[in-house]
Length: 155
Image (cartoon, rainbow, N blue to C red; front, side, top):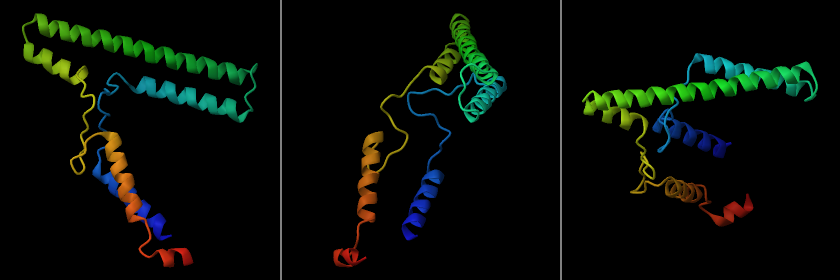
């Protein structure tokens, strides 16, 4: 019970300490994502769940409905990505040819620049994600080790 409460407290502290809405380094947000995609994804997922609950029959109306909804969703994702890519290219080109270099570099940094290998979080001078994970694992191991080995063996 104490251990579970301790882990729960650690989890709450971690959730309050880190901004989970920040994309991982080297990744961009899906700024092209909209409500149409959200609805198409929900429809695809609900039709999959209906197909799953019916026992995964292959030649049934439920399967064809799921397959069609999934195809519509995937095609919509590809279309939105392509449109967003052209939109970004056009914005970059127009700001560069228009002589607005600060706007060009703002667009470039917001959408294309990556900070691969850099982390926004630092613990005890460690900034690499794997090193942070190892540091937290060692710390958790030492915090959860018994104070008295004889009492631990007795328990």
